[in-house]
Length: 158
Image (cartoon, rainbow, N blue to C red; front, side, top):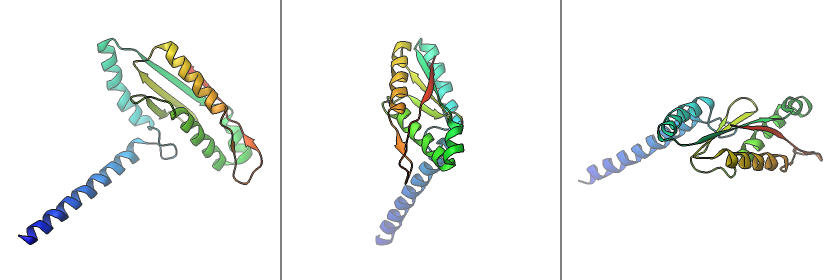
């Protein structure tokens, strides 16, 4: 009887470990490793059924597309490590304040997209402006440098 309990305990521990590893693999497969945002493939996998549901139910959906202004100049002037910090900073600003159910994706190198189900255009425009101001108002210092870097983004809403 003691042996059976030990085996059951080991089996439960093994199942927990497999579950943790599967969750880690899912994250690796669906998330951009630098920002933690959805990657493009996972984004479209999530958007397609969401859009179909909203279309069938007559719901509204808005899209916010953001692009880091003059991104190449950050890489050219400060190096790719700073460019990566810029991307991470913008991703963090874009993700702050989104609602559960909103989808944030790193769409391209310095491009981000947010899908906002059940959102009116006027609300999405306010959110986009808040994001734009948040990014511009969040300068950061490069390690060891005295200069504060200000990043801006251009945003479109549809």
